[in-house]
Image (cartoon, rainbow, N blue to C red):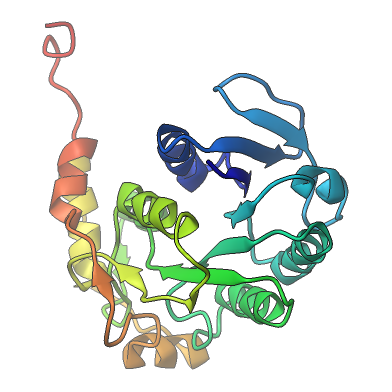
Amino acid sequence: MASILVTGGTGNLGRHVVPLLRAQGHGIRVLSRSPRSGEGVDHVVGDTVSGEGLAAAVAGVDRVLHLAGSNKGDDIGTGHLVDAAHAAGVAHLVMISVVGADRMPIGYFRAKDRAERVLAGSGVPFTVLRAAQFHDFVWGMFGGMVKMPLVPAPRAIRLEPVDVGEVAARLAELVDEAPAGRVADLAGPEILDAPTLLRGIAAVRGVRRPFVPMRVPGAVGRAYRAGDNLAGDGVLRGRVTWAEYLEGRKPVPVGVAGR
């Protein structure tokens, strides 16, 4: 089976992908910025943005799964990684990106768009999967807002949250397939506006607050109102709904956990 380097393997998505790759019989090497051990994988120290340790990290691997990224230096880190991968003769690099990367005027989206362009021009055979926001990300994005005395509810913001496990499963499939360039986007089964998402979080937390309509100004507001962050035709839809995710976030009643 293949030897695979995973960047971002210790993050939320990586923690879901790595066990799947191990179950498929692959040899896994995880890149991290500090020494780690255990988990049945080979940990190597390196940093994509600085480029430190990348030549050694890609040496001898067949494929790279690039999950690491941020809105600062994502294109630089991807550039360093693909340079190392190209020099090492890596046969396939799979990268996670975000739906609407080339349309949304937000730093993280722009960074992903630049990273995609760097990869496409690198000469390394590649696959890019754009995914919508994970349920956990949406919870974190809106969770703080429901604590406010008046909850701002920007109806213009619509999201299609997707289960992180479903994204991980798709990436594990793509790593075993031939390089395909940009493949179909992966999003959740529903398109939900911010008030709906906020009400769900408030219900789970048992919080009651008045909601106040809020207009999102500027270019970002125009992009959200136009649906530039939403997947288009040909999208693959996950199955796990927002309501199902929220069900798993509900507190366990006292006395039930110990049964």
